[in-house]
Length: 140
Image (cartoon, rainbow, N blue to C red; front, top):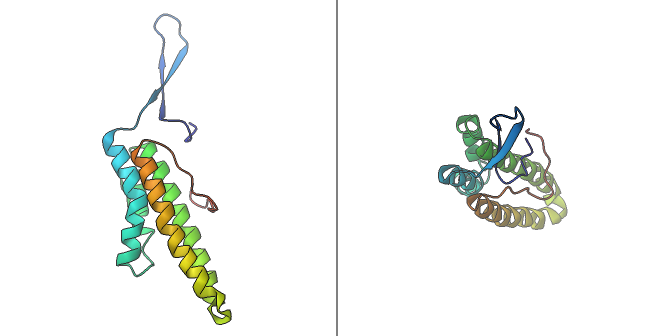
């Protein structure tokens, strides 16, 4: 199944022909809400966890709802990968604080995390698949 399609692929057979019929199923309202939460929940995780718990909400959704819905799984994995990438970038920025550029990088990372999470959350709520730019795809 290609996760970039606008829905989940469902296979069935055309009566009398024996051939497969593939249809697309749009995500349900609950799936759209959970997909949005996978992205916007990272902002709450960052605020509550002093910048370090952005990964908690997408990981929770991946482990609980991801096995039931390919749509939720896609958004949780995408959000989790983005949060891992941000943590790596923040660690590199923390090292560069000695040179003075690290503080500017941390501010840019914080701003990008909020902006891209909001964009992704809105796209997920519209039933679309969103890919974060500049993201390491470590979790499959």
